[in-house]
Length: 314
Image (cartoon, rainbow, N blue to C red; front, side, top):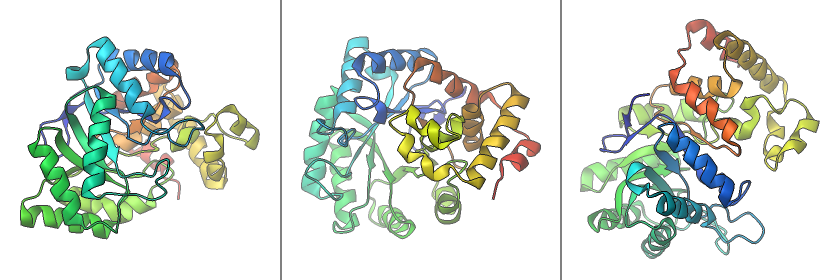
């Protein structure tokens, strides 16, 4: 594996990012520690989380994922060995819509730093765009945090192409910090929106793309093929929409390509993303240490044109 730079920053990461949304949701602290130990033990160094993970779980308030990551870094003394990406501006308990006001960002960064047990965040990402807050106010807020040393670089997710372009232009014209990364919903099944609206922007502005739902909530692993299979996991309800003719054809293609390369469907789906222009590191989660193998395999796979043709299901 080779280190890759995020945008034009000096943040160097290996080409898989661990998605911390499962911490405090589908796995407990003990299992989270075991999985992080294995992920970092194999040489990876990039972890993504958010200030609101996992507020949707009964009894949670948001921030549980950051807390587990912070406790792990402190316990294992790993802070300087990992690149931490977290987010601000998402929905949460008592917060039904995104809020990106200056006051909210300043308040939330302090809480994230406390939970993560660190004094800086490597990549601070706008989770959802808040159209009621001027873009200039958001960028000025990030600029202040960078000057204070609390944030190194910034990224963005869940924003319209128009507002993304406006943000990038404002950064250039007024010398605000520039987004270095874009976190879109992009995978072998969900392709149209990114490829038609965002890919060109990412290329032109040298944004590193960090796709979330890179395995379509587990669908692209191949473990969900019937309605009955959906009962296997708490995330099963998120997969049902993929159980259609196109989805099953994609699974069949993944079976063929994974057999050819003697690897898993998940590894092929991740490798496919890594072959796409601007994709730096797919974000992928695991709830068992055995799931890490697909992350290890993916960066080393070389897909050929025959593979791409098979996987290109309209």
